[in-house]
Amino acid sequence: QVQLVESGGGLVQAGGSLRLSCAASGRTFSQQAMGWFRQAPGKEREFVAAISRGGLSTRYADSVKGRFTISRDNAKNTVYLQMNSLKPEDTAVYYCAADNSVVLNTIATMYDYWGQGTQVTVSS
Image: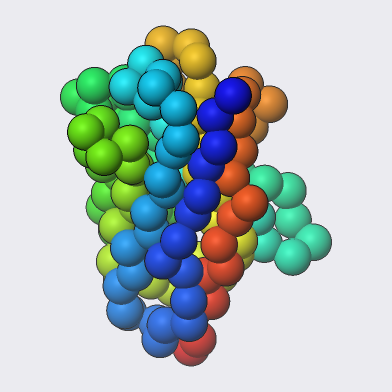
């Protein structure tokens, strides 16, 4: 069983930055691809970014490309999402997820484990 705990959300002005962290329990972290998703009120959960097991491959949604960076530290069982140049439309609950497959999936249902989410609010 894998448990994921996100942190680092908060309120920030447009143009600002936040760094989300997701700490994973268990000894399988380095064998799992990791992803970040977000869900705004009244909207479906959407893909934000994903990173491969070793951290060499990444994938981003077009809406965040060039502004967000996903990274991981397998020694610390932690994945990060650095968010720069934040916009009001980035406001959402952000979730990290773990995937036992080797593919960088963008579909939420392909992920096996989920955190509880952390709120990010960007004011204009």
